[in-house]
Image 1 (cartoon, rainbow, N blue to C red):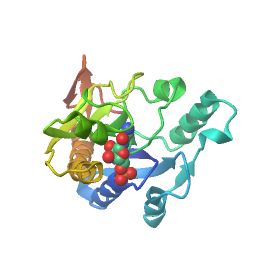
Image 2 (tube, protein in one colour):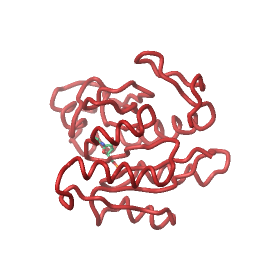
Image 3 (tube, rainbow, N blue to C red):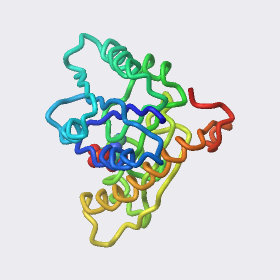
Image 4 (cartoon, rainbow, N blue to C red):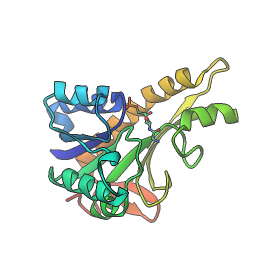
Length: 206
Ligand code: GAR
């Protein structure tokens, strides 16, 4: 099976969707560890419930951001993942993490990139007044939410939406997009053709 490490900071509903999918052998994917940047979050409880190993690395416990980044890289690498998925991980990783997992570190974002990057994708789309928004799964690069796009899902913005109702609608579509995309990567692999992500293993994963 495809070995996944999932990085989280919050409620972990995307993680849960992956864990549920992984229970099916045909999905051919295993979450081998869950990493977080804080404790006391529901995402870690979900991992423990599923008996998945967890690790927590808080930036404030390190002298420098680079030391935190290296530790995150080492801990993640210890589980020998084929793919690392940031599912609501609210930290930007640094150079050593990116170098180690180049091309196989994916992030899910609650907006249709390149619109509304950053920490508040759902809120920013609502405030701008767009009538459709959605979720994007992309390959992380050095920029903030600038990497090559693996998949997108569209959701409507309703007149009476608040940030919360809109984000919840996005998250329903986001979970399906994430589960479908990881399943397809497990079956077929993927590769980059410039900025275009293509399924099929021109370059096999690991
Ligand atoms: C998701 O909607 C994810 O796209 C978003 O946080 C939520 C986490 O939900 N991530 C970002 O905004 C990253 N900039 P979850 O913890 O329930 O999976």
